[in-house]
Length: 353
Ligand SMILES: [Mn+2]
Image (cartoon, rainbow, N blue to C red):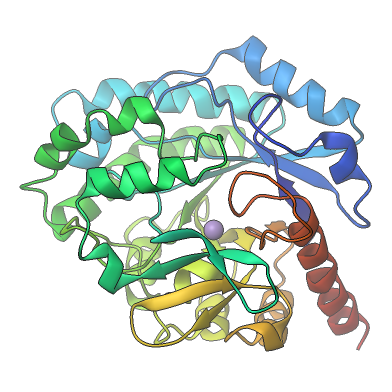
């Protein structure tokens, strides 16, 4: 596996590339062009500048998270082919610049949902947390306000204010979209882009829905082993793959993560490896990567990735806020650096055993 770090780009991130470079074993960066809107075709010069910035820092640009999908594609409206063409052009440009992995998600309206961005833990650290009971009391617009006020001044990915200004219209768009229709629209999209992925050798890696059940009545489809395999079989091209996010999958404790990893040999193109702690159904919080701090068997997860021969990028995903660091919630330097070392320690020991 190649250890990587998500970086939001200059002006969007409290962490700098030189700091990331000093983390032992850190090979590369996962980033995106934050000034592009879903549906836009990416500019070639901007892609080159982004890549140069990363390589000048002695790091490799290991993939994009994310090239976001326009709602027309998710809803399946008549203008979707225009946005799919833009997406294909972006894939071609990324591939021609040596960038071969694109993470994306197919969740309606919200990329991810949390009820708390800074839940205190007994040791004084704070973490992102989810409590379905709290979410049930909120309207989507209230949740957005809550997240925005807790974001430490950063724009949270997937929660851009321009987008949230239209949250009512977005909900109306999805009013008549069933889970089956959403799934069919995803398959339509993937079938349309696979020839370009073949030509430029670009792996598409869909992120697991977070949390992996319906929130605010919106359809959710990438939630469990059965659904993931259904998508892999519907579009059997190996460029149609997964971002295996252990944190998102673990939101439903019924998901046996090592088993899911083993069922996806050759189809995992990117891994988010982190730990969560569960209390009751629908209630969880993010934990330190160290296995005993949460509910996941981190050894079994890394072992399964090694056993299926996974060699793609992995990132520690989120971290706790520790040592008074102020950052975008979940995306500080310190705890993600610690987490990367724990994952690499497990990886080295498993490889040598
Ligand atoms: Mn993730």
